[in-house]
Length: 159
Image 1 (cartoon, rainbow, N blue to C red):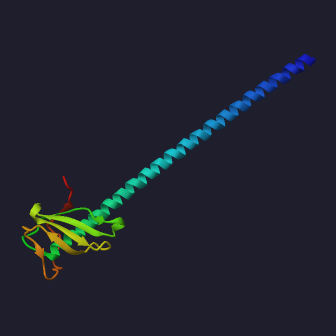
Image 2: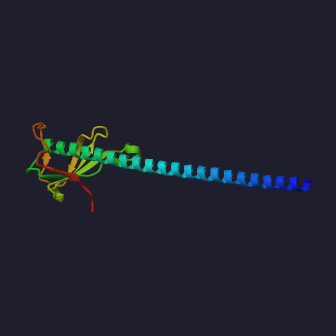
Image 3: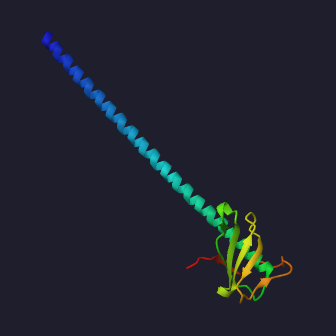
């Protein structure tokens, strides 16, 4: 009888160990699944935030291009402007301490390329360097009645 009780006790111990290991394994698997889910969610969230940031930067750049193009239309005199390519805002020196510039090309002609020195805050040109053969020059007075209607404004990318 004593031997029978020992067998039962040993069987209960073995069953307890098996159940304990099974429970620990189950919990470990569930925790690992949750960790993977959280990592995937974070990665997706970060990717979404990166895309949103990229879209915001592109929209800001487009707005800046249109602002510079409008300034050109209102403040330059020469042949009718049909197309303006606006380069990226370039900050010179350490953290822009050397100034800020923007290059434009009018009517897809290299001779109508202008490098503007601009205020880094509002991007209003303060001065400009024109090609010696440029067809454009600064007007004496801003013509606020002019707008960008019918003028193609695009990003100027160097080849």
